[in-house]
Amino acid sequence: VKRRRELENGLKALTMSRGEKERLLDLYRFQLDEIEKAAITPGEDTELEAALPRLKNAEKLATQCTLARDVLYDAEGSAVEKTGTAARILADLAALDPALAEQEEIINSALAQLEDAASAIGAYADRLSSDPDELDRLLERDEKLRRLKSKYGPGLDDVLHSAAALKAKIDELDFSELKEGEVRAEIAALTAKLLPLCEKLHAARMKAAAKLGAKIVEQIKPLGFAGVEFSVSVEMDETDIRDNGADRVEFLFSANPGSPLQPLKNIASGGELSRVMLGLKRDRKSVV
Image (cartoon, rainbow, N blue to C red):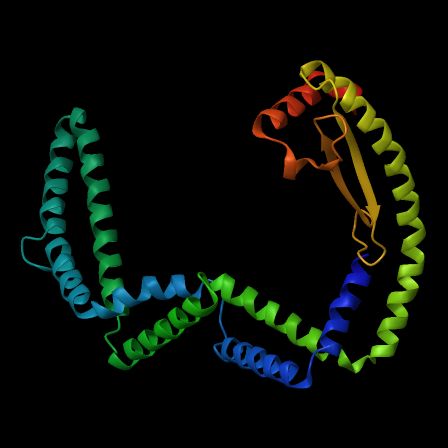
């Protein structure tokens, strides 16, 4: 069934007017080219969102990080210097009273952490770049990705999925490499294989439909439908083969004796529909 559907879609492309086909191909190829030229990397927009604020504020970040490092380490009377002094004092005192050894250990640990933090902040400041050319490049890239997301998004992954869909559409329109006669022949061969299966399924549905119609009448007559008629219409359409066969199923209903059966969805009132549904629910197993 899937292969037959693919062939029918391809046949539509074959029978499409040449002008319409070329118009669509031009559009799809232009859109695909626009996406492919961008050379998108998954997650790239998230990386840009993180990098741009850092580049825009590189000078401020560098200045403040240097200040923080000085306060911690380099400046006279820095946190590291004062903590080191406290550590030396506690070491001398702990030698006199071991009860102070725990505090000495805590201060030495704090000193080590302060030195590590000062070193990390300094390294971060050294890595910062305030290159205006790099900032312009990233801003331009960010704008390009935003445009693509507005056209094919909303997300960057959606843009990549759109590219795959466009390729499929182009392939479908290029299906004309396979001649129309060959496509029709393959469709006919597949139809010949599928129709017997559809007919077998149709026959089984007809039997089930007769039983179902009678059972539903039995269930809903006591609900104020003394002259009710109900049947299940099962009509086979050989031109419309689907995954579940080629049948069109419809409930037919008449609430009054002598009235012709008509589609339930078209003629039943709200109250009648409610009673029909109630009848169905009274004994689901017997209906099935």
